[in-house]
Length: 446
Image (cartoon, rainbow, N blue to C red):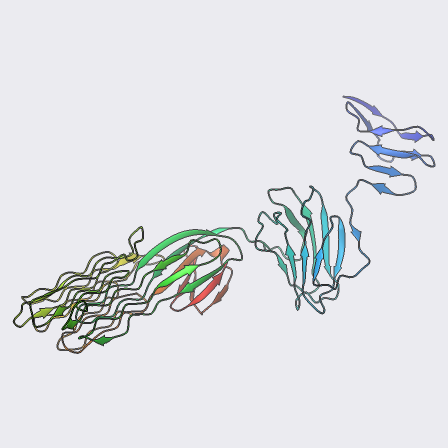
């Protein structure tokens, strides 16, 4: 490549000087001039031109529009500036469907009302800070937004927006624990609520809806126990996770099939048909089937056809309930144990099954993780609230209710948006994570 150094280039009418041709560069020292006579044009290799009347073409510049935008919609054209007046209504700005690197757009709050009526940017299929959703929303009084198109990967990038936070937050991972409501005890113990975990990547602006299931209500032991209600998480782009309510315990009844425990996240313990010799079947856990399994089966109940009857224990998240027996000292089946999780920063066991009762041979214990103990002659114990524990069975009287479920979310502290409904318990700085514990229905927006 040759190089010519000059102090001044003077162009006569009718001649052309081209700068930047392949192989040749013209370099002017500091203070040197290019002088063009009337009517002449200097053409730069990129196609941009400069004329001696002060006009320039081919250079990126912003053409400010004289009309003030007051409508609720605007279709923007590249390399223009717009005054956006939202005094009467919000405004949605649709960006160009195609763009070239270096294209610019500027939007300014004409009447300082964006905090009342916001401006939403419809990305029109192109990336904005690397993502197409959600649409950015600008709602700061007096704000001016300047964006430049960088190419397909990151798309439009703000060079000035009076706010350095992401308008289209990047995706991040959330850990979920979803425990359903426990089943109520009858004669057999109630099954624990289904227990499921998940780790999923979420995009910014996603509304995660949280449903927390109630425990099955208490009921007399001559009826089949009530099952718990489902817990779930769902949202756009997420795999919905639903944990099934625990199955109610089987009753001490005179006719089939009410002696059998109900199916559910974990199955309820079986009861009996007294006074005849019979077996009350335990309910089937992991119903409906999930992988990994969300729970286990309830134990069977028994009757010796003479005196003694014993209910099976409700299933738990990590173990099945044990069977009821016809000899003491503890013939009522024990509830299956729950499963431990450290999602909240410390190990907590949840979703234990309720104990099965007996009419004189000793009562079953509740499984670890909130399962309630059976009662005879005293009262049965309810499943612990917000563990999904199954309720204990009763040898005489009323079986205990199941414990309400719980849904827990854990995410990096830096990604927590602070936008929730339903008043979850919020703990930050848990080994760099923010943990949301929902003891009732609510939502979190990423």
